[in-house]
Length: 128
Image (cartoon, rainbow, N blue to C red; front, side, top):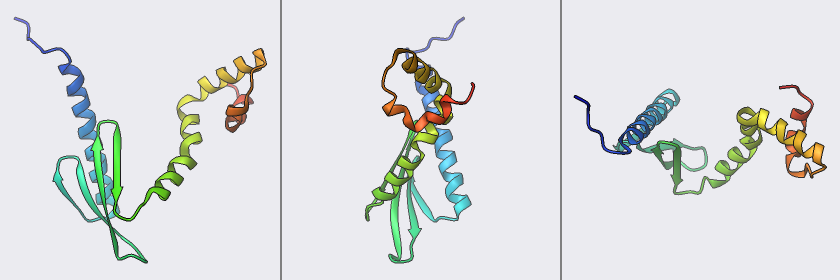
């Protein structure tokens, strides 16, 4: 006898597994860093970040399957912006190097502008 399943259940089970893995990763990182935190519900962490100028900044970390929401009373957006901006090109290089090389070659062959690919010029000189 075959098992009856509702449509889409396999997808939500996979997402639940991904979210559980993400929660485990956050909890491990917080423990390794020795940060004190409370978890009022699964995937939500209120973390105490001790500071030099301000005694502490309470920060919410809210985990989802494919995202991490960071919220703090005193705006940490500058730090988030700096980190994400500085690591954007290296992250693209890691994940999409071969695609970037193909795009570069396609544009060169057709004489299309390379202006928005200049950050990846070093990839054009490297073989796949």
